[in-house]
Amino acid sequence: MIHVPPLGYGGIERIVAALVRGLRAAGHTVALVAKKGSACDADARYFWPGGNVGSLRDSWRNALALRRAAREFRPDVLHSFARLAFLLPLLRSRLPKIMSYQRKTGGRGITVAAALGGRTLRFTGCSEFICAMGRRAGGRWDAVYNFAELDKLTFVPRVPADAPLVFLSRVESIKGPDLAIAIARASGRRLLVAGNHAADGPEREFWDRAVAPHIGRDGIEYVGEMNDVQKNDLLGRAAAMIVPIQWDEPFGIVFAEAFATGTPVITCARGALPEIVTPGRTGFFIKGVEDGVAAVARIGELDRAACREVAETRFSLPVCAEMYLRLYADARKG
Image (tube, rainbow, N blue to C red; front, side, top):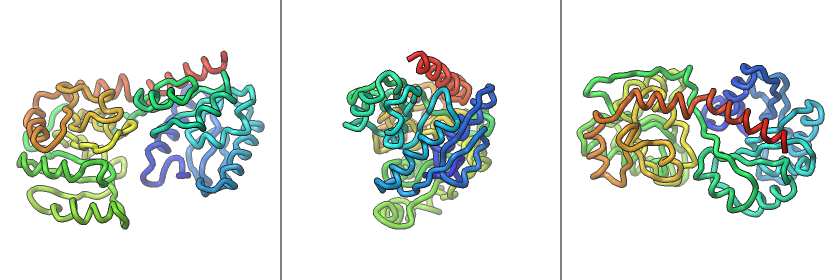
């Protein structure tokens, strides 16, 4: 329910917009179904009539709108990054369908959909971590990683010895900005904190208590939310990106974006991160402040060229688009 591409934050919507662009560049005809006002270039555009995803009425209206779009556009394959419920009127149809998950998944809904869709329905997850969850509920699952838009991110092979550390993510408790601050202070390194933060609620309390008091002290700076140009500059001049996640990350596009600029990653081995970071080559895994400080001291051992290579060969639009195209072809065979 966010514009494609997003006007601000919206990782999945950025992926969808770039994927549409990549598939059309490869010669395919692509229709987009998205929030009204989405500016993504496509061969046809349709819009969701219901804006409240928590409403059964709006969900059903969107499901019917998707069915109408499919009947009008007559696609060879329907690929959804939206709600599984929106596919309900199409599950028993012969149209090949791909349902992609970018977050934790599982449950009876997938079991029922897999049974109704049969061989016409395939699932993807943005990591093997997500696929493993989904497989327990049923259906055929393939991991297709997210990607960085390499044309917007410049490889920087070397940075000065005093280059800062960077925290780039939503500034909230599950991303570990407080741990990043503690590590930077204990290491005597500058830390640039970038990203949006909550205006109210528990996460605003976390910001006020654990982050805001450190801003402007001991080399800790808050630089706000970044657009693409600012993000490229910020990551490119960093010694390392330190985002010590405190939850099971489904993927984390920002890690691929850091690699694209050559910037290694210091994080925690949770969720999909063990699939993304190679310890000692493109980053380090930590558990707390003490080993975080030790990791910062070893940044010079990491290979910025290897980081870019990983972005190009595993986490780029051409790689992702080709994986989806193979999946589409396979889905059409049944």
